[in-house]
Image (cartoon, rainbow, N blue to C red):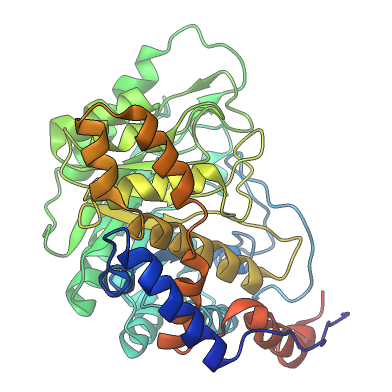
Length: 432
């Protein structure tokens, strides 16, 4: 493995403090309190996705290959091969991300001591090490049933399968997972978002679109009929526009799940890679939140399709996070990451993606929103546009550097120094 070890240059503590003081004064001139923004940013807890660390392999049968239209590209050396390695990699990632954050687990990351455990029989005990690790590090845990990469999902249908036996297997799996999510919430003192996504759909145009959706609705009704404590577990359903092998028809469409969530008072999960490239997730948030109490937001970066690239500080990322912040939805939106890139250092992918979402939040928190709203209410759209554009050049990076300094994580590119050292010390020992 080739390891880069060139020391990365970055600002000194004195430079960070001086730049922050200038930025604080600049923002104060616009009526923006940077200390208030930093306090709000510290309260944002992102849910990192465990599957970035091992290319969505899990520990059930890590060499079995992916299914459900999911594909991970790249073979960068050093991916996690066990739960211990994955937790160590996550510890490294969290140490480079300012703030206190959560972890999003999939059911295939159960630890069963090498025994085969059917997915409809998975229990909280199979995640006891994850709970202890989360408790020791102050992380909340979110959860997902895994309805892909399995022999009973090879047809492309699970909860909407025409075979009642197969359907019942996946119903049992989801019921078990909700119980595990409830266990996480109870043990860790913070509710777990248990999110159901299924790959069900067809490559070509179906004759009957309604029948699989009726079966899915009945299956979900059976799953949610089993009571769990909402203080410990929050149920969510996630749509998708299309996927590999489901290009023409997806059973769990946005409209299907939106209606189901409204009817049943549960969360909708909006994944930014699961919609058409021209659709704005930012525009959906205020509409959806008029009808459901909370929602989950999975932030990804689709490039022409749901390819789950590492989140960058794009206009789309900023628009989504800005809507959450300026709309006053931080207490109603559970923000998570959902991408997987095996072509680069996987820890760097976590860190870059998470830091970009937090930076997008900071930009929004530092926006002169009160002034912009006043101009909008007065009908002065010319000044509103001018101030929108002026705000883009304000010195938010100086505030971000100060935030990193406050939280004792590397400022600027220095986090890559730590990643390269970890790669040399740990990842390089794993081989390719």
